[in-house]
Image (tube, rainbow, N blue to C red):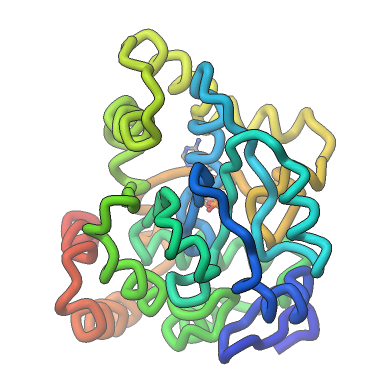
Length: 281
Ligand code: A3P
């Protein structure tokens, strides 16, 4: 693997996540009103962050990812006086212990792993902070083995699976957001205890967070490192590719589909979250 990644506790991380910071995660001081926005990369993190950022009167402040940067990170987060919404791609096990003790609210967004794999493949190709990759076939193997940044999709989801019924955790599916964004927005605002019942507001949020709107805005703005959502880039132009459900069909060969389905069945046989994807395979 290229030098832009390093391994920490067996998981690949970008060098923008310093080892020192990763080693210190358990010293992070969570606040009771913190909200964590958690995902495996390419699951729709920017989208849901934009939704949350556009909730009227939410009185929140979106920070950069907890695992991005060096040890000065915690001081930077401490300076933020508002209710913090903190993104991260960490698995449940790596999440700072204080967040679990204080039972901070956590939103976990999941996406069909086939689409996630294709999206991550393009991210590897386009993002200078990730290793170069020659072909989809080569990437497919890495993805299956979990030899990619933030490790195996399967392990990541399974780490959250065990906590899916915790009352401080809300699970949102990318495909559900595509199908009925208003419903997802309602779930999120109810979960956060923000009063936005007005359906008009849902409409405003839906317009502002549409794929085309977000893509256009990304092209217009200069990248601001303080508004980084994913620890793998602060260049939002790398994020908005296609924004579709089912694009995997254009990449997977019949054999890859079989191999993937076999592994999925084996790894996810006890997973209720995984059942959600049956319609999309
Ligand atoms: P694709 O590469 O399939 O297009 P993340 O934010 O976790 O990095 O996820 C990025 C993926 O979410 C990309 O998928 C991106 O296009 C998609 N995405 C971002 N904003 C979106 C939106 N408003 N609607 C639908 N998909 C969106």
